[in-house]
Length: 67
Image 1 (cartoon, rainbow, N blue to C red):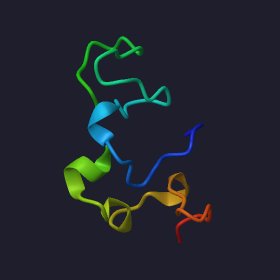
Image 2: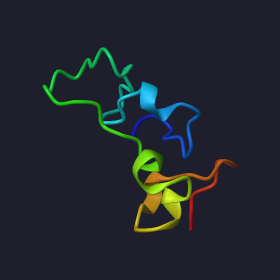
Image 3: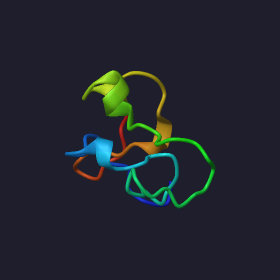
């Protein structure tokens, strides 16, 4: 991803997380005709990044890569 992906944003419901544009939920600029893509924390909880294989996509809050 081009932009830093936040682990636990304060209001994830306000943003579409489907692409790197991070548009407001009420004005999706990608134009794919779909609804808002939820942040993983909305679906799996605040510790979502600790499960599964996120590889090099996820960085810790300290800027280090998750191991």
